[in-house]
Image (cartoon, rainbow, N blue to C red):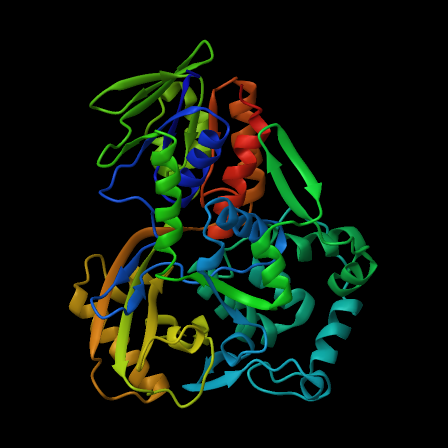
Length: 477
């Protein structure tokens, strides 16, 4: 039997890493501190077939990471379980921004190119011209807000990037790193002087998919049925029948079939490294292993290391996370005046909500309208204090949909979740700090790989893709 590899953290990153190790014939131990696997992915099935998502709800099929998740779906024999929203659907095309309690669709057609429309109030042509006439700023990194303000103007920064950043990261665009979140835009300016000029000058290569074999990574033309289907049907976003939790269940089935050791309620107490061997203290037992994959949040990993790794601990502790209240509201019948993906609220508009997703516009469920209100994020403590009750969050969500959507009837059912520390904040300088962490691990020959949303991307796709990549790059034997 090959030696055990230990994965700490049973969220989607830890599960994906353990799965890739098992596929390569390795013995794996996966330890999760909580009472369930899946991390922030959690689907709540109700008795009548309705499903609430309390965490991530849709995935994008595009890009290297998007295709990697579709490949995983095929590997788990779950190809037929995918449900998708085509790019032509209103739930894909219509995204709203709330300004002064009015919801404005983001327009991208010919009219928006030449004429000003809310919420940006400037024609897109002038935005392009501003970028092309703005000199390059040589820098290692910059906040997402400052980058957008400088290159595209205040309106785009305030009413476009600010709410987008809140919806994606739960964070403040004035703090979040453009290099970490929108690296292609940052590199376009650094390499070519302007964003649009850089995008036009870059040669677009034929899109290929990453196929991972036990012996490495190779670029090949896609043979993934799910990737082929996503292109043929023009998917905008997709999910799984029964909710994204089914992807977690698929990974667990595979791990059990490979006889992986799976432990719940088993927090790692301490990590020690000596002579190329890792000692993993799990409280109930101590494991010696050739390599550890840490999929726990960066500050949690810092707490497991001894003071001899003070430099690494300091770097890990720079990656903090924000709290999010998530409230699912279900109404009888159709209560929305228009179909859309949902709306986002810029920070300058105040309020306690970051935005609301119109879940059943994307994936209808019987005769119900289901909305998910996102609360707090970077501003959680300032608007809710340290210890809000579920009733506090529920009332905030109900007030939000009444104010913005005019829904005054009480919800038929609801579910309230408070996710503490759920979204890591990749603030300015994140990439350089990440390089510092990995340089330290390499220079000190630590048998440790860091994976998860704290590092290379916060989306489910990013977590799955980089876990796959991390296992591949080690060339474990």
